[in-house]
Image (tube, rainbow, N blue to C red):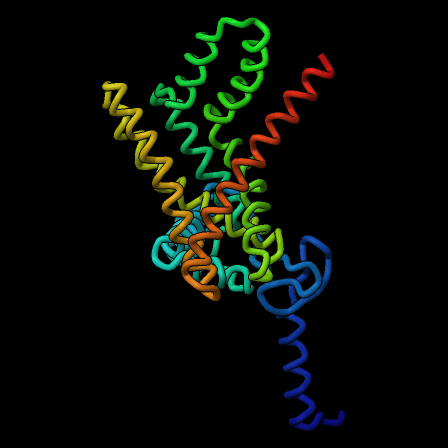
Length: 277
């Protein structure tokens, strides 16, 4: 029997090793080499779902210091402008996605606020103003608008998600010369809302033990100014290609435009309700 040359034996062994290293994708049934399927992107490391795998997923996707919520939060407080800019330019693998980031954090904040049984200054103001209205017709109209705004103030998670597209449209119009498209502004403002929510998460555990209503109202007011301040800070860093005075002016204009858009939205909802009633 003829003996195979050494080179042929080496190539044959190498081919066998490559075949053995090939993984069959459980998602699309494609054979591939490496850690991820080059056809659909599924990871080759698909363990059976059990307690260990769930614990591992939570640790590495949310609580891991080099990936997930903590990594994103750290970047947003250390250098928010650079962090968001890098995300928009494609450096995303270690970050939590902005929409999941804001939804999870705002939901936690809404839950803590609900458990603290605290009403907001805006809710109390609208309720008192509505009750003091004597004219029946105007009271009905105010009630519609008041109920809408009260719902927004009582459902922070949903309100945050609803306001993000509005302020993103406002910032897109005001900073249109920076060449960022609307969806990039959507990412920017989602991260800002997430950072603001992280700060707000520290407040309910404190206000829970405060019974003085005036102090709670002061804290609610400070939260508004703090949120605006954080937005100014991030806009100032993010839009660093334009002059400082323009950054400040266009940020102010963004807030004014956002308020106008929200008022227009409320008026449209009121008119639609009146026509359909």
